[in-house]
Length: 473
Image 1: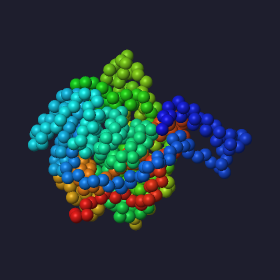
Image 2: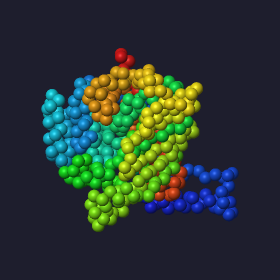
Image 3: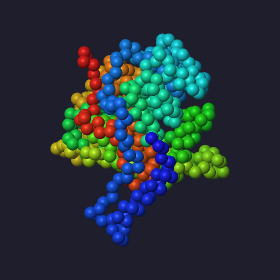
């Protein structure tokens, strides 16, 4: 697919907006009989010959899932430890360009009583890993820019892939993931851990059992004050290798990290399995927080303080689905606010929300929160079966309260039994697509922008999200 640069997109949208206005009337005023429509900046290409969709893909069961972990920063180190608790997983290779990070991971394996893994510290070590015959799953925890390239290369060499978020930074990368997964028939999962939060899983169970009625509107967010981390220099707590995450905030304006809020809502709404995201509108506030923080930490005359940061402090993206549902996703990593993913579900029979107050309201008394006692009882009744199965161990292992362990457990469980993964390549592509689609909308004063249909119509073949269990259990 030919890459569309931001200037071309901007000029295209301005031209199309002018054409729409001129067509509405001779004076350019709004005519309700000729409404504006969302702009298809990124058309959905036809499926290449010989490919088929991979919804609910099943592959050969793996007695032991041989894992290679690429990237051993904060997320990668955690993955080494968590996967060491799973009997059906064996870590056979680890890679990072920072030798001390590789050494830390080896020490973790030794402490967990696991055999040492082969190590790679060269920049292209991930290519060598993808070519190995004794690797089933490539588990990617590098900086964002390498997620899609490593995933595509690994699938092309016959490997299943799981990548930290985001899976893709552009629509072009998203299509590369989809087409490679369809062509190779390999699993490609984005590691969205919030789908496995205990409350999120309970609300998924509630939604699937009809407790909320017809779900009409949802809200999610990634509101997380990361200023100290973004500006953490080498040796300071929270430092990112090469300060790569700051560069994304300096160069792009949009919803740069929407998946934590969107992922659980997408499964509750059965997106890509009975419904799909159709178009979005996105707006960002001005940029204030990064500059103010940089001045305070480094001084007003520092390079950090004088730099122009593109990312507005608060981005709000509103999505409309094909079935008429709405989703509001917020992104703010530069304001002194308490952490929140919001996680709000509003339906014809009930309402649930996790932040800033955890609560549920249900008909016939929907205007009042359930009491703490009734809420606790309801959450026990609707505890997701997967949480019932492995929740206690997850709490012991940890990782954001246990949801990271459930995510890894489910990934290995499904590969071990040859089951469809809970999250697939279409989830990875469409959730990640918000990044570039929101940038286009922001750059064009909130212009409605259409989503590509990464399933190419296959979303109509299903009507619900399913987290599969092995038949013998």
